[in-house]
Length: 141
Image 1 (tube, rainbow, N blue to C red):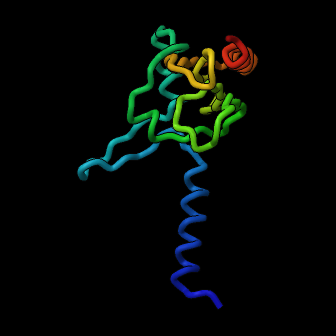
Image 2: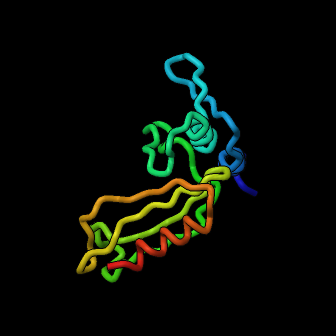
């Protein structure tokens, strides 16, 4: 029979994972005793777009990009001919979904297995454009 503490810890982990998967429209953050409400990435992008801002290459506020996990990763490809232990930057392309927005990002290929090129990104509501962009970036070079 398992220890009561182990069962309780397991239930707590499973519950936190289930709750973490359900991303609400607004998430509450508690910082220094004050209640602060932050928007989801999808809602924030909608708000910026309604203000007439081109959000296709907008930079997310740092707290937003680190706080919310994507609803799903729908594409990922990395070119890594060297060992899994290699710490170099490798070319990659990925598409993650945040609500009805797709965040397409990656690094372009250079000669050799590593890249020094900066990361590129695109926010779009068009999944076909996201796939086209990701595949073009990972295949060029």
